[in-house]
Length: 350
Image 1 (cartoon, rainbow, N blue to C red):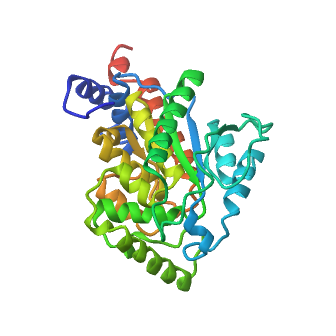
Image 2 (cartoon, rainbow, N blue to C red; image 1 turned 180 degrees about the vertical axis):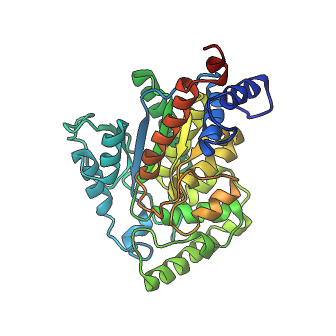
Image 3 (tube, rainbow, N blue to C red; image 1 turned 90 degrees about the horizontal axis):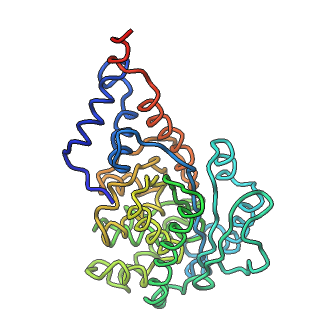
């Protein structure tokens, strides 16, 4: 895990960037990406190997009420099966850009036990179910704190295994879970201190009336769990209002940073997991490149809170890791120009 400071490595990287056959700063953000990639990998010649996206899926008890979601809870499982058939947007983008894809059952209310670890479409599948959907946090905690511990550890294990098996050094995280924008909004509000309404958006297509009901419901949850006075650990916050997929992603961020990986942060829900990971270890953020600013209400403020500059602005709010899949080619372009573009020094030798 890196700590970005002024160093001889940074100076050497900046010198290499400045000596390329171009005006100073002419490649804009790509130059910043190249510099950060080199700092993360602790080399003046960073490289992207076997980029990978992991989509964590889980169900949320609150979604059984229909108070915060426009789509029924069963859609979570349906979309997981769609991922495994190769028919979702994340499949399209991963195929196009040669990015490996793994889907994880972190806690979907569906029996995937008959599925093989890898499907015919080449999408990896991991059975890691902590529970059959979280409990309804309108009535009590979403999950036991021990379940949070298990989920975070499982997220770490999954990243460690991917690195061991594929030698991947660049990873992005995605998610699927009807109702998970509500969990993310509550986490964001508790961590940042922003009002629930400022953190709550339409999710998977709520209309104006549904959004008003969603905000009202989440405000009740906020007050029930006393999130306004929140001073507990990230584990306790996840236990109160989190999701299995969010907890597992939190662990995945921690492990990826510990392994000095380039982490591509996707959208709003994955951002909530990153907020929690940075509370556990603030240095995690130094390994992150932020793919895009989601059109989901609250994500722009979340990025501002983390002092993060997204690479893309496409008005997307799909999740699944789609923003990360679109950003990884930009990161590849940045390290490629650093390694393959001629330098002024080389021109001078001719």
